[in-house]
Length: 351
Ligand code: 2RA
Image (cartoon, rainbow, N blue to C red; front, side, top):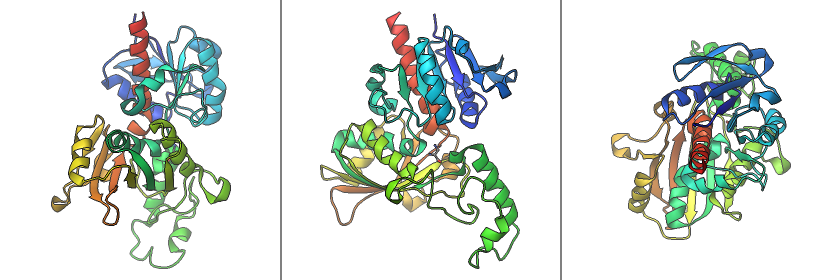
């Protein structure tokens, strides 16, 4: 029998993309159960071309479930993923609740699929979307060249802050679109926009060097996630990572400028060869013809797009690159679906 899948958080921004993916990817699932908060129970959503009624989250929801995906806030996952696991399901969690737990693998199937098999708590974590924007391409380069150090600046889309982020950006853009003068005087955009939504400054006509919450020594939680999660996924606990996370007025698709230092001398030709052959990566690097990834072109696609590959002028061991990935797809729903499929294959093989 095909395994039973539960989607917890089916009505959210990532949940919506998840239903679309489950309807278009190879169908490895028997029953798909849709679960959300009591507020959304009774709603009917379409998955695999059929209407399915959403049920309210409860312990009984997990009866007979083989794999339970969680696309919910950290505190909801922290409470419910262990309950799903105690009822025999493998929980695949897209929140930050378990990512750095040494007993929970943090999995990107193209990089460390085997790690999904060792899950003492019955939970597998899906990385943060910003980490996911670069780690597939970096994993491929690391396997050949040995990664030593990363310097990263992110250009993160509004939907990383959920639907309220998207709503806020659209509203702000509406308020500034018709002006011929906004953006020329200090504070004029701030005053015109009024409400910043989930961001600490206006996002329209602006960039905001902040994502997440304040941690020790001035670092943001997002910057620490990029560092710690990259180390865990790549199996490089001592990797040096320097990150600045920035929000930009893009709806969906995160971008990253990456300076990567390797153990071995690098060349653009070798990097192109590696990236071109890497599963889940699209090399788009022909600046002479204006070809490089941009969020507006990448949004809605599955792979990590890499362009502007250059060898550092001052370090023959370092590459500079620009990467883009849809933060709701590979950055969230797609990677979760891929992990769940790895588990489904394992369960089916075991039967
Ligand atoms: C963001 N990475 O873009 C976060 C969401 N998980 O805000």
